[in-house]
Length: 203
Ligand code: ADP
Ligand code: MG
Image (cartoon, rainbow, N blue to C red):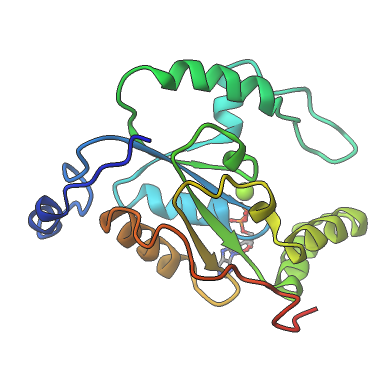
């Protein structure tokens, strides 16, 4: 893993205008993941404004020839995630990485160093997806995925992870939380317990 942080230097740099520049000794690649509608694109755009480089699964897939043709049934272009994983493993395997957050609901399936997982209560998620114009079938599939824990089911548990409830936290607070987590050297390495909508009775 390439994550290493000089926290002492961070405090000096924090007083400068860019909270992140220069304090990380080495690069990191974080997957910003979550069920569609949880707020990844919104957070990624705002993160970009706070001095963190942002990329996306779609643009990486396009660059590496892993993006299929538009599927008219669901208005999305399929990503060949296995092929992208192996191409990026090869490319990223050599040399220090950049400091970058990669946005996309498949980003946790890429060879990243850690994860930011966005969650959203099923009721709020349903509203967001209906507003987006998703079909009933696609909305239900995504809400069910979120109910069952979303990306938690696919994430490598040995890497740092932080989770945010975007039905409670506005985008700026999520961005602040991500910046703080990076600044603290990805501590805590994982939440004490994952959000469980079923346990909370929000079903
Ligand atoms: P994703 O990229 O994960 O599919 P988006 O960023 O497109 O999600 O957000 C989906 C919808 O939810 C948008 O209408 C956005 O304005 C809203 N949204 C995103 N994040 C939040 C948040 N933290 N609080 C409230 N609404 C949010
Ligand atoms: Mg998006």
